Image (cartoon, rainbow, N blue to C red):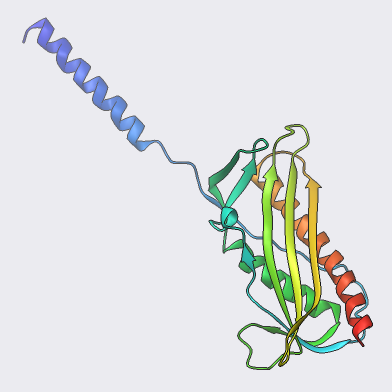
Length: 206
C-alpha cells in the first residue's frame, strides 16, 4: 500500500466520522404550552341571567398555527417552530372564558356550544393579537387583544354588548416561558375587565 493511498483512506474515514457525528446531533426539543388563568377568590354575584352559551372563538390567521409569534420590529413578525401551544390558542382561550364566566355567578348556566339547551345569551370572541413584543429588548412584552360580542338570543338576535380589550404585560425576558406567562397574565386581566363590563350590561338590561 503506497503512502498516498494510505493517506487517502485516512481522509475518507475521517470525513465519514465527521458525517456520522453530524447526523447523530440531536434536534432542538419541541416545547408545548397552555394558557391557564384563575379568577380571583371573590364572592359570586347573584345571577342576572338564566344562561349563556360560549361559542368557539376565532383567531387572526397570523396566530392560528399555534406557534408562538414574536414581533421584531414595526413590520416583521416571526414564528417559533419549537415552542407551540398544546392545542389551538383560540380553543384554549374560549375554554378559559367559559370557566371564568361560570365562576362569576352572573349566569345560572354557562353552556358549551355543544349543549342542546337554548341559551338566553350567546358569547362570541375573536383573538386579534397574541404575540411577544420584542422590539425593546430590555422591556419585552406579552400582547393579547380579544373582541367579545354578547348576543341576546331570540327570533331577532341583537348585540347586548360588544367590547374590545387589549392588554400589554411586561415580562422578565424574551424566552418562550416568560412570553407564555405574560400572555396568561394578560388573559386574566382581559377576562376581569370583560366581566366588569358584562356585569354592568346585564344590570342595565334587567
